[in-house]
Structures are given as structure tokens and as C-alpha cells.
Image 1 (cartoon, rainbow, N blue to C red):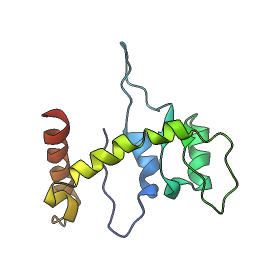
Image 2: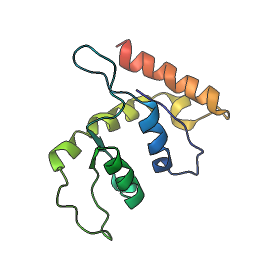
Image 3: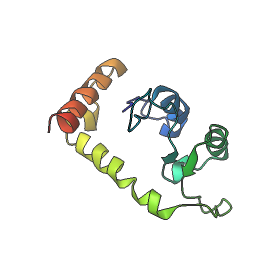
Image 4: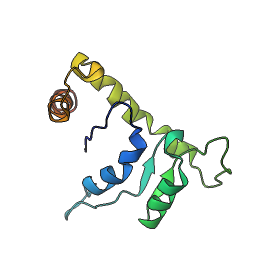
Length: 126
């Protein structure tokens, strides 16, 4: 899992490239982790042409619904998009921690430390 923070007024889609470069996907068997996943799911906010081009160049399938002002994507996989709710539920569980939800910490390093502690408690210690 990779956790990055943005400024409050910035859109998180700007961090997609950094997330893709920082993360690794564990293999089921032996061997080094893969640097790129098979697919990336996101909401309509990630439906920029430049982001789709970036994913296509890296050989990653984009499971992102098109915006109403964009041409229809015939290869949109609704079943794979429904699996995105696991990530949304995890984020909502993290927001149950008041310090994470309201971002009391002003410094990015301190905030990322609190998110990491909350993720360890919620995801690995339960």
C-alpha cells in the first residue's frame, strides 16, 4: 500500500503518476513484486485523456467511467469497477480516526505518520 498526501486544494488525480511509480504489486508466487498492476480503477475525476494515455503507455488497463462530455468507452468493465468499493470502505474506516478525517496536523510528514499508524491498527492488527 502506498500513501501520499496532497495539499487540501489540489486534486488527487495529479498524484496518480507518483502513486504508480511508488507502489508495487505482490506476486502470488515467488519473485520480485511487479512494478505495474494489471488494471487501475478510479472515479470519473480520473477520466482525463492524459491519465488514460499514461496508463495505456505503461500497459495498464484503465477501469474508469467516462465523463458525460467525453466519448463513450466501449471497453469499460462495470464488474471490475464495482470492486473499487473495497478501497472506498477502507478510506472511510481510516476517516473514523478523527485526526485523519480533519487533518489537525499542518505538516505533511506528521499527517502521513498519523495515517500510517491508523492504517497499521485498522488493516494489520485487526
